[in-house]
Structure formats: C-alpha cells, structure tokens
Length: 448
Image (cartoon, rainbow, N blue to C red; front, side, top):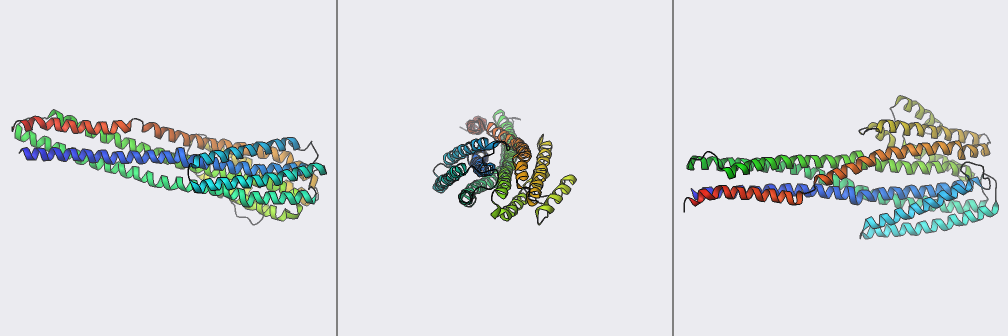
C-alpha cells in the first residue's frame, strides 16, 4: 500500500512538472513572438519603409526643383522644394542609422546598410552637381539644359536601380522574418494550449484517483492537501489556457491588423510618391516621357489594380470601380476588403477619394502637355495636383496610423499579459507539488 501511494504521488508530481514544462514553453514562444514582431524585425521593417519613402521623396523633390527652374511663383517654389529635399535626406540618414542599430551584429544587413550609405553618397554628389549647374543656367519652368538632364538621369537611375531596390530588399528580408516567426510562434502557442489542457486533465485524474484511494483505505472522505492541489491545478490550467488564448490573439492582431497593413500601406505610400515624381519627370525630361508614362501606369496598377492597358482606360476603370466600391485589387484592394478596426472604413474611403483626385489631376496634366500646353501642365502639376497629392498622402498616413496604433496596442497587451509569469508559473507548480506531498505524507507516516 505505501508503495502505491508513493507511486501515485510521484506520478502526480511528474505530471505537475510536465504541465509546468509545456506551459512554460508556450509562454516562452509567445514572448519570443512578441519580441521579434514587436521589438526586433517588426520595427526594422518600419524603419526600412521610412527609408524607402525618404529616398523616393528626395528624388521627387529634386525633380520638382529642376522642373520649376527660376520661377518662384509655381506651387511651393524652388526654395521649399530644396528644403524638403534636405529634410528627406536627413530622414533617410536617420532611418539608415536606426536600421543599422536594429540589425545588431547581422553581417549581411550591416553590409547592405553600408552599401546603401555609399549609394546615397553617390546620388547626393550627382544631385548636387545637377542643382548647381541648373542654378547657373537660370532657366524658365520646364525642361532644363541637356547637361542638367544628363546629370539628373544618372542620379535618378542610381536611385531607382540601386538605392531603392536595396531598401526594399531590407524590408522584404525583415518582413519574411516576421512572417515566419508569426507562423511558428502562433501555432506553437496554440499547440501549447492543447498540451496544457491535456496535462491538466491527466493531473486532475491522477489526483482524484489518489484522493479516492486514500479515502477507501483510510476512511477519510477528503484529503485537504490533495483537494487544494486539485483546485489549484484546475485554476492554473484555466488561467494558463486563457493566457495562451489571449497571447495568440495579440500575436494575430499585431500581425494581421497591424504589421501587414502598416507594411503594405507604407509600401503603397512610397510607390505613390515615386509615381507622383514620375509626373515631374514626364514634364522634365521629354526624351523619356513615354517611359515615365508607362512606369506611372505600372506603379498605379501596383497600388490599385484595375484591368487597363493604358492610362486613359485606367482612369475610366478606376472611376467606375471606385463608384461601385468593388472590383479593384492591389494594395488598396486588400485594404478595402479587410476592415476590422474602429475608424478604418472612413479612413479607407478618404484615402480612395484622395487617390481618385490624384489620378484625375494626372489625366489633366497629360492632356495639357499632349496638346502643347506644357507650361499650363507644369502650373497644374506644381499647384492643384501637388495640393491634392498632399491631402491624399495625409489620408494615407492617417490610415496607416490606425494600423500602427493597433499594432502597438497588441504588442503592449501581449507584453503586459506575460508580466509575472516567469515567477508565477514555477511558483504555482512548486506549490501544487508541495501540496501533493503534504497531502500524502501523514498517510505514509502511519505505516512507520
């Protein structure tokens, strides 16, 4: 009889250890997932997204400065465009520095950051030469001289073919890390929840069997130590399952309602800004006008896809499908179909309306330029179109902020939920084990 009591008690303690182990591993998986998504690779993606936008806008401002020429009454003016160029350059440098810090000791990412610094330095030298020569020429609004155009082509090609792809590759690499981490840790947390339920159920069965065995052989209806231990196991299992369910929810919300949308909208913003610059390039460099027009269509299709082989068809299809609130894909199609957050629907509608106005302005600019009214097109491009694009961009920033808030809230909630579990979980397991041993000890002493 003592041997059976000891065997059941040891079995119960071992199951307690097993329950502690599976719960501890699941909690650690949740902690690792939150760390990577919320504090490591996730912020790196945001930093590289900011870098991509800053680099794109640097080139956009350079194109506007060269397009405006000596005229100071067009749009924001040459001085403001130069100011914005310097501001984006500072933002790019800060984003590069932040990305380098977040990369830690990763040699591949450190090399990419260094190569981007080198590319940015080469771009700035070419841009500086173009600006200096353009100022000396003091030309009217419109295409600058061939020497300036040649320098700008070298600069913008360097940006598009070297710096921007590297920035995007950094974003993709860290985005892949976030995706893989989420898939692994989220499934591990849910699997851990199942194992906690199974271990808790087995432990309760063992404790009830031990309680029944003692009741039959010692004629005591309830063993207080085992009774408290059984209640403690049930409570711990319920709390642990609730915690893991909550943590899985926080991870899911951070990934799908936060990170994914922040990443896609940041990408859409950078592409939008680059496409907006293609309008200036279209007017700035007539020799590449056809190329810039096709590139503009390609970027527009990436942002909001509708079936169209040319810009005229794109404008018409865009108006028709936005009026129907359906039938479009791309970044904005995905966003419009996944509305889950407070205020998101209104923000999506504002963004889409702004995007539609931007495309209407583009149609007007190209129609004027095609009819020989290049100066009138430049006036629209630097005036009405710039104002509409800024309002659209602000609507896009506001929508992104909704998802960023959801992301930060999910990470903060997940971190807060795990507070105290490093001590609470082993403490609870130890207390249950002590109660089990304390419950059987008096019975074993009766055989001495």
